[in-house]
Image (cartoon, rainbow, N blue to C red; front, side):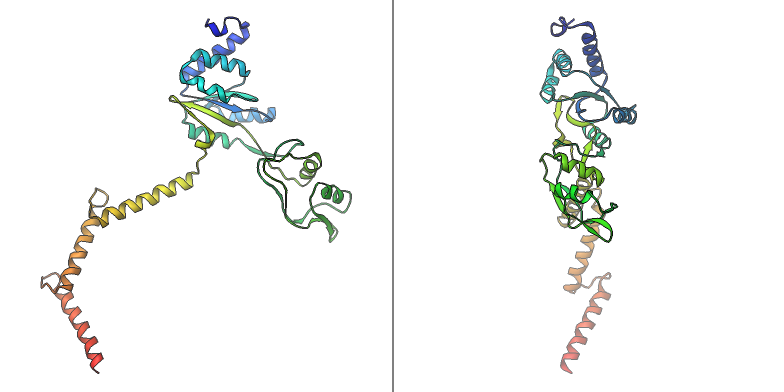
Length: 282
């Protein structure tokens, strides 16, 4: 047994050994935050990831023990351990894993004391509530409510909490009644170790639509440049030749070079010019 774990109880040694075993079998090792995820949703996430990834929930200290024993660059992952971390093992690349984990998130009601992940906006419009104490409860929570047409109505769209601000108990209760669910609950990737490098979520959170659009634009611009510069490639050779023929034909017509391929066009040009001149004389 390695120096790091010789003093640990047997069950902790087994936990460390399991982490080390999975680390050898999978190409990617990641840390995910499990905080606030209901047990039922955790089980559903496990089922959704079955065959794609393995989640190992254990103490952060044991994760650190295992990473220290494995050594190498993997130890850099320990600085991302925080809160209710768990390990995720997979053979997918970090970008694909991040996308899969984003799909595990579901919207849930906010609890008092939680921080708003984004600005929480309550839209204007009618509600399903009949007149009663609910009007005062909404108003006390900072939501502009009034009675109109026998129903409770939100008079104007209002941002009730700014991103990062703490949600107070009255507002949390009001949002539940309005069925506003601002909290994203699911596995949050803290960092991923893959092929010797550590990837943070900020690097992995790419918009595929934007990236594909940029690639398509770059391709179009490269093709246009190749054709304009007469730099033939296997993809642009035909277009380069077509442009060259078109340009050569235009020069021949303009310079009145009597070649069999352009004689008709030269005569047509002369006729048009003579017609213009005739019209001017008239």
